Image (cartoon, rainbow, N blue to C red; front, side, top):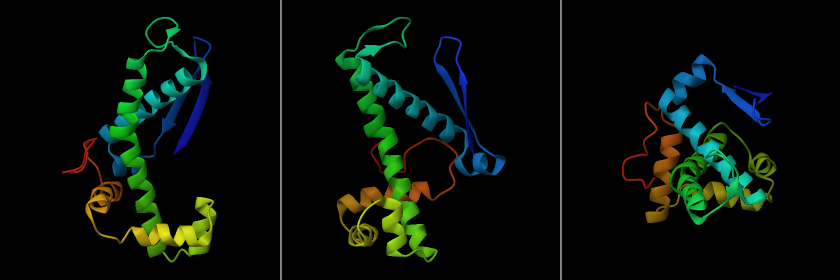
Length: 154
């Protein structure tokens, strides 16, 4: 996977994410496209928060609650559950592959005990963990669409 950055015609930058054939097959074209669109909305929201303007609809204007509502929706319902599931699946796989708590702590930028607690929480049960586990399973499974796992909000 590579990221290319070039100057855009409007003075901005165009970002292009290239997936190899293997990566594209593993992620699925619908999933990759949806995640890129959601990340685009996240970047749009970040820019709007930093400069107080929305510029995507043909001209700069002061941001409104509806602009932030769309950003919140995309982050809360779509992007964050998938990113948390990806993180949890990576932490679990790291352990399965023999990764140590010290290595995990270094990757997370936390104390070893915090990393250990986080990995151990992946095996807990209960309604909150059941919901998170659906996204973890989603991250570790081949995808054919951008849909949420069955029974998961998002």
